[in-house]
Structures are given as C-alpha cells and as structure tokens.
Length: 82
Image 1 (spheres, rainbow, N blue to C red):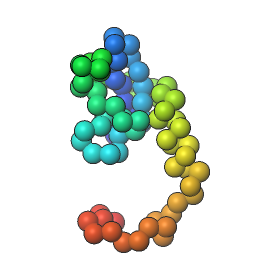
Image 2: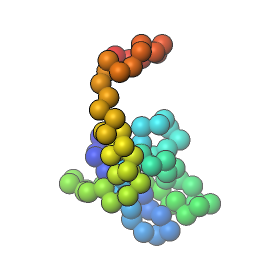
Image 3: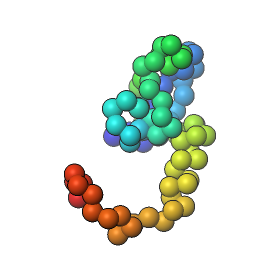
Image 4: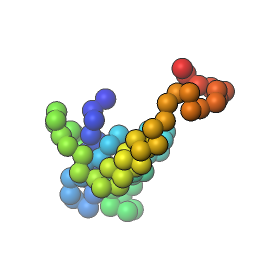
C-alpha cells in the first residue's frame, strides 16, 4: 500500500493518507474519490515518495498519535483479526 493516495478534485491533484474506514472512503479524511456530484473525479496514480498534502489527514493522524494507544488499550472485540 502506498503511503499517499491521489484524488483529482475539481481538476486539481490532491494527496491524502489512505482510508481505513471501509470501502466507501478512499482517504483518511473521508473522501470518496468517485463522487462527481461534489467534484471528486477519481483516484490518480501516486509516484513513489509522494508526500501527503491534506491538512485534514494530518490533523486526524496527529490526534490519533497523541492518544498513545496500545493494543492493551482495547477490550477484545468480536471479529478482531489479531
């Protein structure tokens, strides 16, 4: 998996962290890349080393990292794969 996901928004290339919330969202900040009604024109190829430029993806990442969570922070949940 690449560390960045490219999304064409209103004709402009934008770079995001990959989504983790299931198949409906392509980015960490919750973008569905294939939603032309709001100007999201699809995924675009990402070159090796591409940096993430999305401020919202960065804020989500910073807030999760700041929680200092570990596996032990979670109670066992049915369906866990670990």
